Amino acid sequence: MITESDELAQALERAAKLWPELAQERTALLRKIVDLGVEDLGNRANAKMEKRKQAILKVAGSLSEVWPENWRNELRNEWPE
Image 1 (cartoon, rainbow, N blue to C red):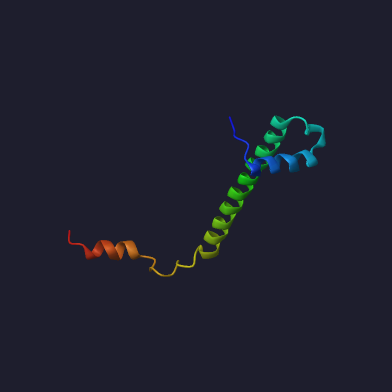
Image 2: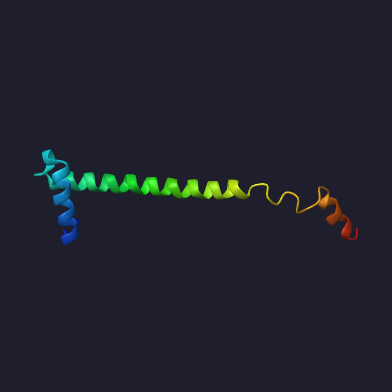
């Protein structure tokens, strides 16, 4: 059960203007509002993931020459046997 706040009532009124065929069906309007919210959440999550991927791609390989090619062997040789 959802309590209808002033904000929700306004959202339902706006939704009724967007979908006049559903104006008398508040439950259907609420479903539309929720569907839009779910879609927006998905879009935001995808945008955030894409931003992270771009940041990773931007720095990928930038540290490749920090360590010498044979760094593992050098590290192992530092330890007594």
